[in-house]
Image (cartoon, rainbow over all chains, first blue to last red; front, top):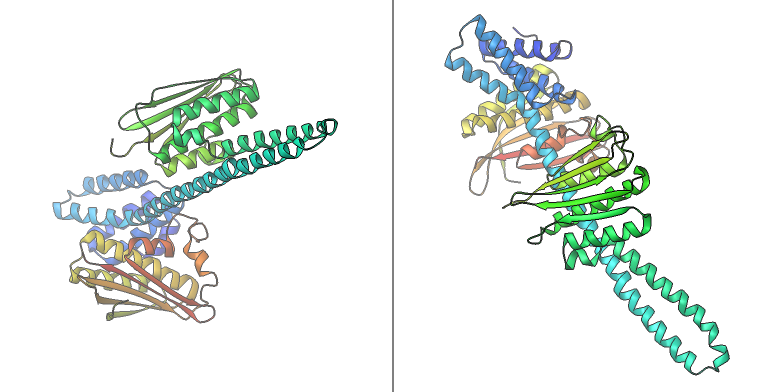
Length: 309
Length: 136
């Protein structure tokens, strides 16, 4: 007989799993199911994965079967026991799914807000500035010629403000992304980054049709972040951006010839930039691959599945 | 929430009681006609609610009952205690503040594996959680 839930805490998972399973097959009792559940719950919290648990189950079953040939009825019971132990993982999985949906929603809300601010900057503030230009021109016309020069400086400042606002608005939410799509937006971005940083940035790719808005936005932001990383850390001379979309997925690659870095083991332990990229991707069930080592440049490959082909 | 017909009431203060509550829940789930995987989730909900009672309130009770929905029957699990109550209920129901380290277990986990979830808690007075699963 099992001593109940207590021995779960002391023994290695595989040993205690095998014991509880054997107890369940012999007695078919709720105590064993509860103990199995607790053991698996604890394993989950200790970082055990679902495949690992499946291996432990399989191994325990194999050993029991070697001792005494298990009947179909017992095998079925073993299956029920395994389901019970999967239950904490199921709960956790549902939590992760909900998290993904929330993250996606949050990204959409943020992006809509950025769009609104960008629009206000570009159109509304832009129009106001245009009215100021006209008003000044009218004032200047009525002034004696030798006093007009002083307004030239003001005009110059206004034009500078206009330029800054347009740049800011574009950075927040490029209208070309909404109007023309991802590839033209990336080309535009590449041109701007190249001008600002002196790094040569090229964009390759074909787009037969527009991608879903959430995917376009995510990939644009990912490339933006990747280029920021390159400009800040990579000391690269050139960057290549490649975009390839197939029926099932779209792949975006950003490759630089910079100094590279030592990849971190855990996805969570890397810099904020890559973490942000991973978060954007996971909201769309996408994946990120980072290939790099010191002295060999960096390639990041972002892949997003396209639903419904 | 619809009217609940309580079928079993289990005092909960130890691991043995948790097992007993699970047994009652599973028996009623079988009786109502839930599949075995649904019964597993129901037992899981009971485990999570009961371990909260043992851990935070030391004792309380689990009531297992039948409930009639608009078009289908359901099982209801009520966990109540006169423990310390939950001071920041909203935060507890959010991931990341749970004691399970954001793995989706505990109360938020129960909410996700059941169809309906209701919690009332008063600091110093206790907590009552009711969760329902419908037999579709």
